Image 1 (tube, rainbow, N blue to C red):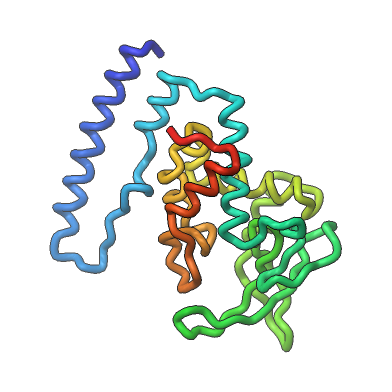
Image 2: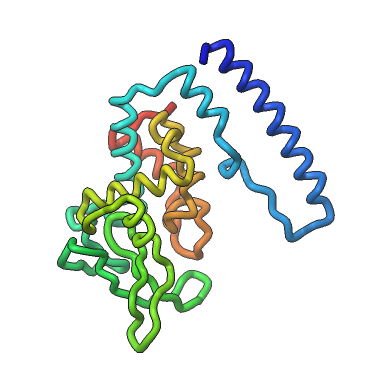
Length: 221
């Protein structure tokens, strides 16, 4: 695609999305229960076309990915030497053979008593037995590890799974290109510590995370 053709396509898509947005707003009038997607949940076709016109420097993209992963670990409190074997709450597990599958109870900011199996640098959850009977149901690690064919819960596997979740959220192109705020907005529902996650748990500020990203070698667009 030539630059001229890409710009024309970009203009056409902009007009189409604005019309669709206007139609959605009109159809939602009087329906209080219907929520329209916010900015970060709209298709990122504009950025995709921009990336085609101005390809991302691959060396910087790799640094941005590494910096973004470290930023997530800092937000989750797992940026230290033992981050990849940290359980929710700070205790450590011993083996990388598989997700540890150790459910723990906690009370969130809304006073709800919940169970979590969060573990590792990115606090992945897997279906895990609950003491006294039953099991946790969130199985993010099981799904993504099976999709990627990951052999274990090693640091390399955890990194690969985190990148896959970022990709599935439509944020990997934003990470590579240095569109940090947009990338965080797209993945905020994956990690409870990110701003706007909405899980009644402590959230980091966007400003502090942006500084962490830059300090880790990331570059902003």
